[in-house]
Image (cartoon, rainbow, N blue to C red):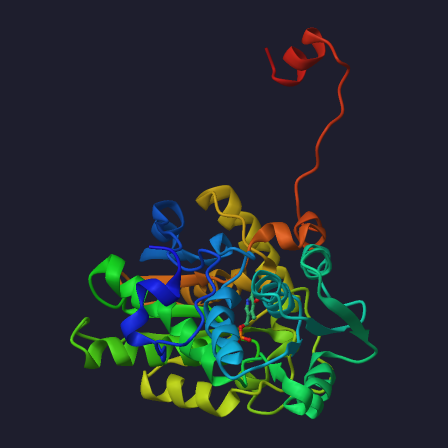
Length: 347
Ligand SMILES: *Cc1c(COP(=O)(O)O)cnc(C)c1O
């Protein structure tokens, strides 16, 4: 069901006076992928977070962060973003009537996400620096004059994002064996883990999954075990060298007997294309790191066979058509005649 403040009211920190913004977030499809699963020898499912109102999972946490900001008397929102956080913050700012400032790394944001923030009416500021710098800046003014910071250092963001783990358990009847997820600022992997643990404690599931976190090779601080000052990857949503939730994510991975792994941009784009071609799902590059990672493990003989894996397709492919087209098949132009059409169709 859509609208997570309503649907999961009892599991969220909501009081009688908390405002309830609602853009119909959550309740996203969990899609079975038999063709890709067969190739890997696993029972593969995809949580299609691109179906959220602003096109990424960020809406799950943003709706709660904005509700709590309003409850606390906030007069404006601010965030730093690789794109999707700003799109989501701007959307909820629009529907609640709050001004919104978004700080983006100049020149490094996918076109669709930039268009969203602008059209939702946010004040968009391109910072001459990378995401990590933009976040430092946003943090430095948060709290002043009723400006609420809605980055994932805001605890309500991660709380709301737990709802995706709850939904997976609700649909499958229990947690999967593995949860495969892209990792940037490392908030979402942390949120999923909290959500799975909470559900087991409540008796709504019987187990928790192994957490498999995938990063882009050029931006893989959690795989390398050290921060990266100049992260670079086609997957701009995970182009983060200093993840603010790094220690929580490490803890989640350790507790779940999971791991972090890195995948190349080439593998990410190949996974994006095959997810579309063999699964019918169009996800942005960052979202395809898990599939690239599962394939990598399979090629090394390290993917257990027959397990049930849920992978998180964090954002919609339409947000970044430029990246997708780098690796796309080409099209042909033809004359506007029936003969020309039949010729290319091989008739
Ligand atoms: C934000 C985002 C991520 C990374 O999530 P973190 O919580 O920062 O690790 C991955 N994919 C997409 C599409 C995102 O928008």
